[in-house]
Image (cartoon, rainbow, N blue to C red):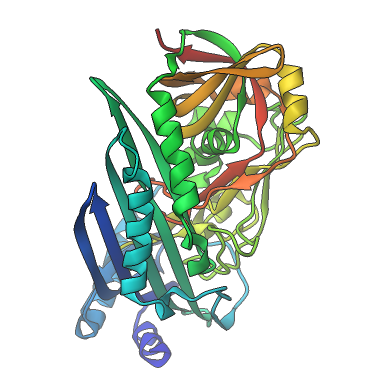
Length: 454
């Protein structure tokens, strides 16, 4: 395949060109309640070619090798047209030429596990939830995605890398009369099938939370000092802060670009945020992005000061900042865009007991449940929480929605725990879906959060 890709590139009359060939394989097993509603596998493949010509940068997707010559001609013509319309010619940051065939180490390779065994594990997890009379139904799915990528550039880089992601996740729905409550459950990762083995305990624990929520008290609307658990703090970091660290989001927004200027004091002194997809054995790990750039750990915030951001080759040249290796595509159907890899708040020095003592009175908010951002403002749901009185966890609360301003919240994070947890299931819908987008945090204290409720 390398020779075929190099042959295609050799015929492209451009200032720069690259081509990515990818085989994508999926396995999906889904239960809706007691019913096995889907089981199957699929394999597809295709190509993405990009070309820089006369200041314009264009891409095209094709699936048949016989179309390569015509597609290459078209993408160069499109690049030239874009270049004529651009106020500023596109430039790409310089990078090293890389030649590597990289296969990650798997503790247990999912490709060697039969689909029958995958079905049995998914069924056992689903049955662990349905065994309780309070559970009305479930939606539980196993998903396995394999991307076998080959990437070649006109500069001479030749990279092969496999990405394999597994997840066992879903929703558990409890009901008492007209009252319905649900919790989400998820496990998985990118280092092997072992991450989803023996899921019953996890599913039983999440089922008990759903049942307990039937007796929980709706939260009272107000402004509270809160402890956010790693899931909530991680989602806040990803959604409210992380996207503004992606250079392509802010480059055409002058006001946001000014606010996100490196050196700006945005957070409290205790707040440090990093994107580090180089950490092995976690969901967001990869070695090379879909531009062939080796991923680097990117310090984004240090002691509350903005010190870095995430880039493609194009945005790194535009901002005159270092490459980070964060230009990623969903699969062969897309050209890559700037994406977070593994973004998290770095751990501090406080135990959870110390955080409760520091909080005194307030709320303990757990597990993200969807949300949205509008500029620098955000709204997130939480799956459940607890009232905290005199540093002690008290009664359970539900129906929690948090709203706030990014910058006020960053300044309001006044204490950071030492118990960092990274997500085991990803998902980011910025233009494309990134199932390996990983986030995390320790427990943190966030002051002055606005909660809707009764």
